[in-house]
Amino acid sequence: MKIAAKLRIPRMAVLTDAPRNITGMSSTYLRKIHENVGKSDCSFALTKGLVEEFGLQRKPSFVRPILIDDDPVEKMKRERPYIYYGGALFVKDGLAELLESYLSLQPDYDLIISGHGPYESAIGMAAESNPHVIFLGQVDKATHLSYVMGANLCINPRPYQKGLDEVAVPSKMMEYLLLCDYVASYKTSPIEEVFPDDVNWINGDIESFLRRNLDERGNPVGMVRNSAKKKISENWGIEKTGVLLRGYLATSDVFQ
Image (cartoon, rainbow, N blue to C red):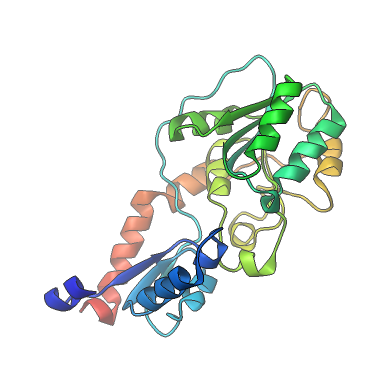
């Protein structure tokens, strides 16, 4: 704020999530984030809900629910087929349901999980007792994306929550849609509005979904194939977003 005031330039807030969704944050810390962000002159946000979350709805806001860094990816090659999840490891994000569903089915394909979080110890124990549950822990971006590209199915098991849905876009879904042939997810409105026909939406529980939509070897049965790859790369990548953002800024009174 001091630099902006001294140079007489506007401050743009970049809004990717609501701080109340961050586990373990103190009320004082959250209040200070809202106070500081709320004094911004404009915003670049993933959802309209985020703009409202910080009280910036009366100021210029550039909203884009999807942003992809389209780097070259080398496809992971494994002998056994697998379904993949990569991201934060919380029970609230559906990891317990995903793991328990897989263990109940006992199919002839692997479940591979990467990431970090409170539920990782349970995943690690499952991996120790079942050779077809593979826990990678935290991996670098290139490794994560290679597993996304090589998967028979990438899944977002986070249950729908209206309050969360309005202010959060699962970044994993952007990567899944860019790289994986088959994508499954519980409802997430920002993605559904743009790619309604490219995701296999989970209605009901994960175990029933997997039983209906994958055979014993992990091959898709009646699932819709993701046809968004080219569209998401061309229309939602860094370069395209930069062009649109520059155009928006050029017409905004804040930057005149």
